[in-house]
Image (cartoon, rainbow, N blue to C red):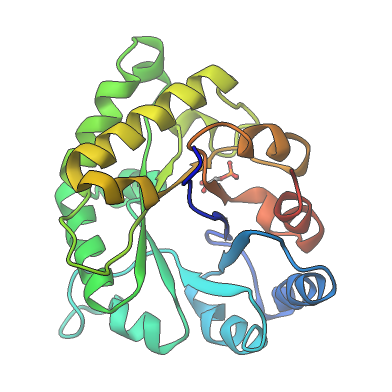
Length: 251
Ligand code: PGA
């Protein structure tokens, strides 16, 4: 694991937060200014309504701002949708694509997720491509197969210099307080690393693989120390700066 990439600690506010909650973004900015996060990148993905404001609040900070979704196209007759060029223009440096909540709520297929990842890359920013099995799939012993199948369909081929991030988020661990065993996370991340090397060769080693699902300050140290865990995607615990900073400084 000597060449493992720098950790990425990414918060996903989902459909939460009003203008008044931007004080939490400011608190993260101030926290990071007072105590730099050694050896890790930090990202927060607020709802789209707060993206531009969050981005200006973090202008002189190491804190980066991202989006939670994008449309496949960059512009046109798609009422209510937003393209990755527009998100970049508003300050996004990453876009989460294929989160399980979008796969479920909006019937996003691997093909759609792949197209969103490609449009994000075409904007010159980094997609965080989410995969993960359901409880039933875990219980019936097909978690690895399911995730590999999702990777096959959702991860695009890359051109020189393009970067992606993978987020492994078991659906049953999201927002439930349930977390897979250290061994289960270890096996899944090792399998994803192997898949990445098969697809991208040596450079598959530099793709960050995040773990997501009920990460919190109290379990972050243990989870972030697992081989091939290169950071976290954090929902609930990213809403309060104090908890999010607790994860950022864990380990
Ligand atoms: P959670 O969500 O941390 O609230 O479990 C994680 C996610 O869905 O990214």
